[in-house]
Image (cartoon, rainbow, N blue to C red; front, side, top):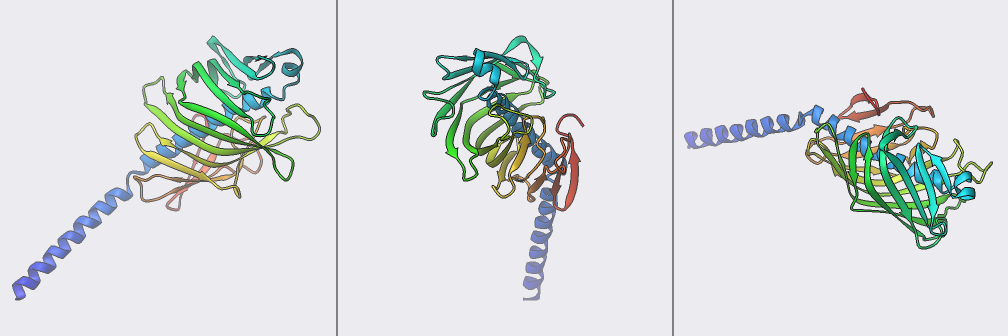
Length: 280
């Protein structure tokens, strides 16, 4: 009987040691991989915001609305088909977009009504489009004009599937989906876009990072992401990022006291990291 009890205790201790060892290994998942995954989420969010910024500028650009053509964010932008189609085109050799990124190729936004009609659905298509020399392809990308909020701001619902960014440096791909609300807070001093216009973004952006790890980001409408048309970086809001392979979530704080700064802060298991949006 004593041998049986002793053998059982040894077995239980062995299982506990194995479990403890596996837990420690999972805890270290490792932090570098978690940091890479968070960084790729931010890359995806920033690129989505900047691509949409050019469109949002276009639909309130005084020159485009008057003459049917304008240069916006380094692109030659035209309004076609009785103002139901906007073409945003960069030269084949590429051009800086004014936000510190290099774009080439074109993307188009089209609707069956007016871009500002309530419940109007805008479809985006991409043609040989490159962002910082990385090829961009999209399964489906739509924007729906939900109408005005109680504060008379425009609310847009953005849905995108199978957005694929293939990095030219062969480090891999980021593939993601978007389901987010964009509230446009307009500078009341002008009907056209100004540097004081900004967006409040909430919702989900999920995907797979270059290292193969999955990320699921959630931004509540009580802590919206904030980005100004005049700034290339998100400068407000908090996002929670779940990394299923990792036992800890990441909390990303984009608040830079209202300043346009090339940095954001995130916390993983009470460890605080500061990282640059562009470059290190």
